[in-house]
Length: 205
Ligand code: IMP
Image 1 (tube, rainbow, N blue to C red):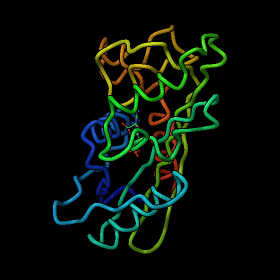
Image 2: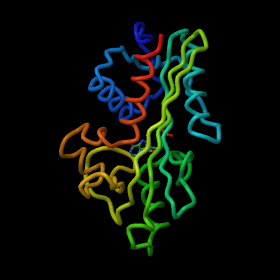
Image 3: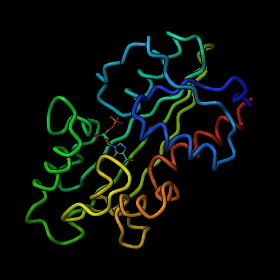
């Protein structure tokens, strides 16, 4: 078991940090997840893959703090857009990152595609844990769904108002989160990735 000392979390996105803590606590993982210290600089996400960026962030944090670290990278892959925005999801509409503009851009690009099958998309999260001794654990989670024609719901963040998971009841992730915070984790990319990461960490000797 490698959870003893706890971890430093690479993300400074409060939505992601809250979700990761919710998922770990419902998975029964009591590991402390500390915030990234303010003096650790932000890592530029220069890699071409979610895994590359997640490792970049976690390794830099281990290097800076000397403590075990957890990082993740997430992308929305829209089938009709050839997998875009993918690894560029945060900056799809340009710099600086703007979640409203990103959603507008995706909706715009899908305008005219009305059959549900042509609006297929998936969220993918790659989560990694890295230790000072060089040990690394990687886990991935994905959820298949489709993009709604307009925003629905006020919960969640990012692309949640337009993402309808196939395994759900027709609500967007934002509608599910508005009704009950944490509800999306049973199905979500992040829920799946971090439950798998927690299981891998717990089974590690
Ligand atoms: P990154 O992993 O911080 O690079 O985030 C990629 C982009 O996807 C950002 O615009 C986030 O707002 C968005 N995003 C990440 N996770 C989720 C999620 O669970 N739901 C909706 N959007 C998300």
